[in-house]
Amino acid sequence: MIKLYKPCKSVVESIDFFEENEINSIIDYGAGKLKNSIYLSERGFEVYAVDKMEQLERSKRYYSNIKLKGLIDYNKISSYDLKVDLVISNFVLNIIEGVEIRIRYIDNSYFKLKTGGCLLIEVRRRRGITPKSCNKAFNQNELNELVLSRGFNLIKSRYSKYSLVGLYIKASN
Image 1 (cartoon, rainbow, N blue to C red):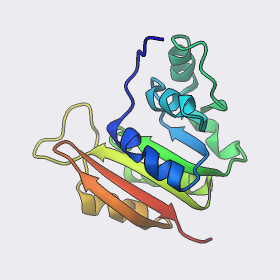
Image 2 (cartoon, helix red, strand yellow):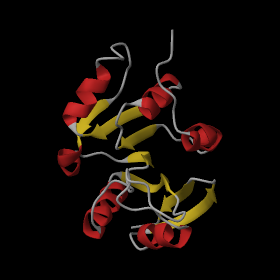
Image 3 (tube, rainbow, N blue to C red):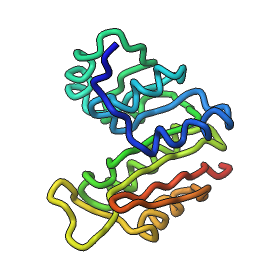
Image 4 (cartoon, rainbow, N blue to C red):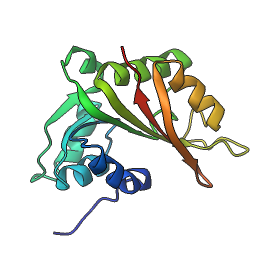
């Protein structure tokens, strides 16, 4: 099978952590072209892809044989009774306009996780001028301030030239 997708580096590099911590169910929150969803599904994870429904349906046409647990419109995520082990978010916070909407996004992630569940976030790192494709680039302190204030604890973080990655755990309710 020819692979038409390339998952984000943060997801690929975290597979061992997912397996060691018995992560099974995942929400790909801002799934876009389904690259992470497909990668994780092929490795046996139960994946719910969340994004604009028209985007999900358009992307799914290219991958008719993938087995996702569900496609969920991002406007309806709060109505789903899901408790998953992991939520992944790759470059979504960069395109969300406004602090209140970013907070709602983090809160939705929190409420869809089991206690002890994890949140893996990758964002564009602030480096001089913010690229036109971003509404917001982050430094590590800004990302941590946003996520830690919503009931998460930091497990680990790292950065590269262009991105920041944070792995967080949901604190007890």
